[in-house]
Length: 137
Length: 344
Image (cartoon, rainbow over all chains, first blue to last red; front, side):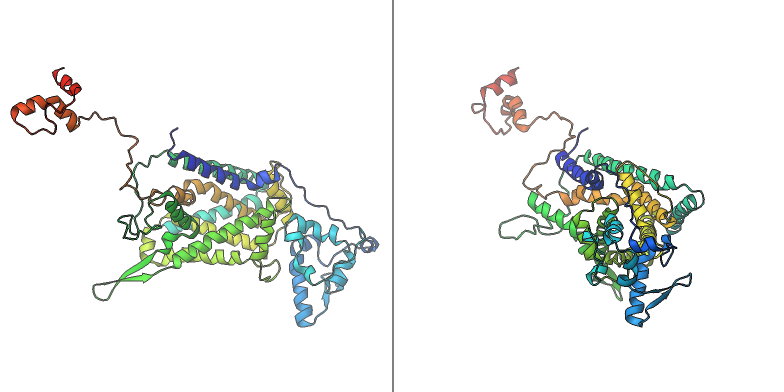
C-alpha cells in the first residue's frame, strides 16, 4: 500500500488512537467495582425502622437536590422543619440531622463521590462551609 | 425534505432505545453490545478513511492563496495566508485547526437597493462553531470520569472550572448551556437563511438533530430525570475494561443517551463529520505554496521517451549544416560521441 506523506499521516493516526483509547490503557482492563456503603453507625444500629427521609432509590439520585432545597428553605425562607411523606418531621440540617445517622462521612459520602469522580478529593462543596463529623479512624 | 428525513431518523432512534429498553428489556443489547460495536466501528472507520485518503497522491501544490505570495524581497509576503515554507504552513494549519481561521475570514455579501454589492462583517458562524467544538471537547473530557478509576486530575480541574458558578445541585456546567445554544444556532442558521437551506441536505441536518438530542438527553439525565451514576459508571468502565456488566435499575433516559452517542460514533467515520480528520489532510491548507521555486514531479507520470532538441541536433547536425539550417553547435564544436551516433 503506497502512502503519500505516510510518516506524517501515520504519526497523526497513532496520536489519535492513543488519545481515543485513553480510558482503556489508563484503566488497563481493571474493572472497578462500585463501592460498598457502610450503614453500621451507632445511631443507625439503634433505629428500629431504618428509614431515611426519602426511599433509598430517591436518595441515591436526588439527595443533592434535596440538600439544595433544604439550604434554600432554611437560609432564605427561615423554614427549618421538613415533613417526610410518612409524616415524620426532620430538622433540615446537614450537620445535625443527616450526619447524625451518617456519622461516617469517609465510608459513606466520600465512597460514591470518589467513585463517580465528583471533584478533586471527591469533595462536593458542602464541606467548604459545613463541618464534617469527627470520626475515629 | 432533508429536515423531515433527519428528524424522523432521530426520533426513530430515540424510540428504538426507549422501546428496546423500556418495553422489551434489551438492556444488555443497548447497554453493552451497541456501544462496543460503536467504539470499534468508530476507531476502525476513522483509521480506514484516513489511510484511504493517504493513498491519494497530491503531486502539485494547490493551496488557497489568500494573501501575497513570496516574491521580490521588497514586497512583504503574507506568511500565514500564503505560506512558502514548512514552518509557515504549520502555522497556518495550527490556526486553522485550533481557531478555525477560514471561518473567521467569512463575510456576507448582499445586493441592496441599486446595483451595489455590500460586503458585511459576519463572525457568528465562526463564533458558534468555535463555541460548539470546544464545549464538545470539554464535555468529552468531563465524561472521562465515568471511564477512569481513579479519575485523572485534569478531569477534576476541567469539571471545577466548568462548574465555576456553582448554580444549583448538581451544579450547572457552563459548557452544557453553551453547547446547546451553539447547536441551536447552527441549526436555526440552516433553517432561516434561504441560500443555506437550499443547499442543505439530510447529511447536514441529521448530525445537528442528533447532537441536539444527545445534548438534551444528557442534560435531562444530569439535571432532571436523574439516574444512578454509580451504576452508570459501573457499566461504562465495564465496557472499556472488557468485563461488561449491566447493573439493574438504570433509568431508560440513560440508555437513550447512550444509544444516540453510539449512533454518532458509528455514523462519524462515514459522514461529513470526518472533517475532523480531513482538515489535517486538506491540500488547500496543508501545502506550502512553493511551485515557483521547487519542481514537483507527478508520481504517476508514465515514463515518456523524449527526444530533446540537443539530441535532435546531434542526430541531424551534418544534414542541417548541409541544408544551411542554423545549428547551436557547429560540426567542430560537437562532441565526438555525438558525431559517431549520427553515423550509426
